[in-house]
Image (cartoon, rainbow, N blue to C red):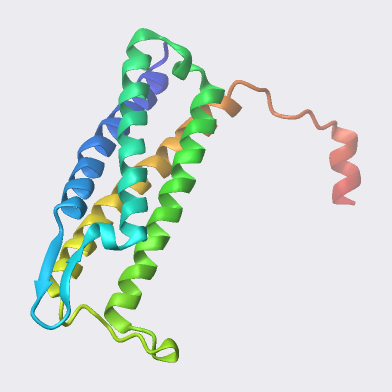
Length: 176
């Protein structure tokens, strides 16, 4: 194996390992997040579907990362470049959608929506909103790891193929 492939494999493994504590910390911050307000009552993560969705996607990303790491040591199915590309892409897209859901939720919590008479909630539930922000930041870093993993997987798949052949006659016609 060439040095560049070893470096790429090390980066891949490091990114997959990084996703695990990031996602677990995001899950823990979200699941343990609750706050009481004497005026508005109790707010918990399971009251908000966007947060439940983020927790589910984080749990899937942890499970997938563990399976991918173990299978790379065992040379199983997940070491197939095409399967990794597909799986990394799907997980990246799921992470994007869950990030978007929580960003939207936080935007409404901080700003409200006067058109539908929703007031902002973070002045009453400041600690709750701050913990959601930290969980979202951890989730976004894990998303960046999966984005990089998707690029690495795509490189692995497409580097197996030769570039398309273009004859010198075609090049001359296109430049004329």
